[in-house]
Image (cartoon, rainbow, N blue to C red; front, side, top):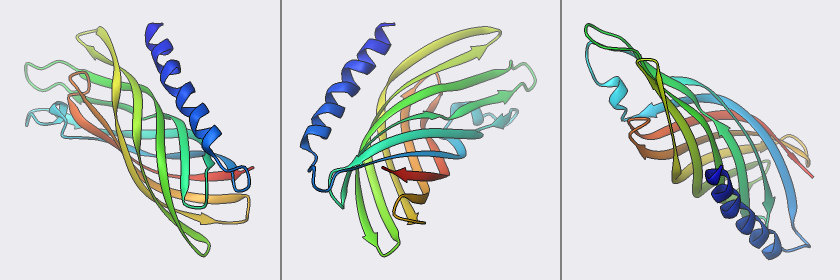
Length: 191
């Protein structure tokens, strides 16, 4: 419960500060949903030769944000990056790690070019995950960095399609990984 309170104590003041800083003459909100493939990078789960490793899973994310101006956005979201694991080899046991969720916050720089917008983002995320080994489950949580690149195509003034790559930094033993990558495709609606 205290981890949820820390998360709320982090996100709410940042969201309020960014919304107060936004120019009312240009400000515009948006929401989106994306689905894609998450992949664990540099995972110790997948290094032993005798193991068969499943280091990717289907992922989804929900997000929303605010255009402060044409080039600067503040974005917050929820991501579910799935489960990774190793199948037992000789003398090994089944190990799996599940990314329960990430709550994200990022500043996004956008560079419009006609109907396309190219963007980069940097920020952070609060994550929670669990690991199962020999039938025992262990939970952990923490904060990590978040970076990403993408392109968005405007279908209309109120709707767009977004293709995006994001790297969630999670240097924790529960995932035995340095980062989890997400490549996703989704729809964005402005209001």
